[in-house]
Length: 247
Image (cartoon, rainbow, N blue to C red; front, top):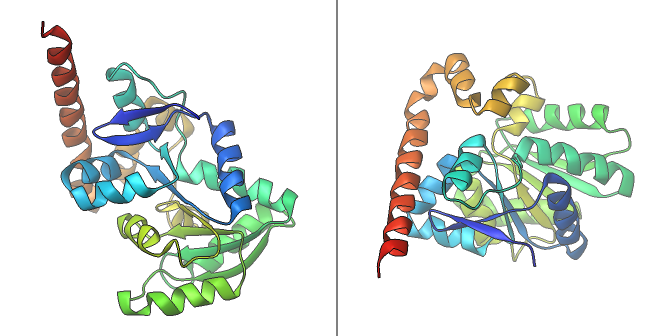
C-alpha cells in the first residue's frame, strides 16, 4: 500500500506521476474508482465543509495538484515527491489509453468545449478512442440520463471537467457508472484553446496562480483561497508541534 500524507485532514497520495499513472490504470482495468486531483482550493473546501471531506475520503485516489499542496506537504514535514496535476495526468493517461486501446468519454465544459478538447487529444495521441463527449451544464435531475448516456458508450475511463461540483457528482454516482472516473478541473478549456496554462517555470516555482490572476483578474476571489489554505496549514503545523512538546 502506497504512502499518503495528511494535509488538513485530506489523505493525499505520495506517489510520483509514473506511479500515479499505474495506479490509475489499475482502477481503469477494474472499471471502477474515483480519481481526484486536489489543489489548494479543493483541500481547503474539504477542510471547511465536512460533506466535501467525506467525498474526498471516499475517492480511491487523491493526487497533489498544485504547488500549494506540494509546499504544504513540505511544511508539514511529510513531502509528496512531486506535483501530479489533473492536466498532466490527463495527458499521461491519454497517451497510455491510445497505446492500450482504451475507450475514453469526456464530460464537462460549455457546449462544444469537450468536442474541441477531444479533437486536440486525438491529434496529440493518434489512435486515442474517444467514444463520446458531453457538455457539463446539466441539472441534478438530468444526472440519471447523463449516466445512461455515458454507460451506453461503454468507456473504460470517464474524464470529467466539472469544477468542484464534479467531485461531489462523481462520488454520488460512481456506483452507477460502469467505468473509472478522473476529474481534471479546467483542463478542457486549455485543450480547446479557451485558456492558457502558465509558462513552465511559473508552474515549477509555484506562481501559476499569479499568472492565472494576471490573465483572468475576475478570478481574484477564488485566488484568496490560497493564502487561507496556507494559514490553515501553518495552524496545523503549530498544533502538531504543540502535541509533540507536551510531556
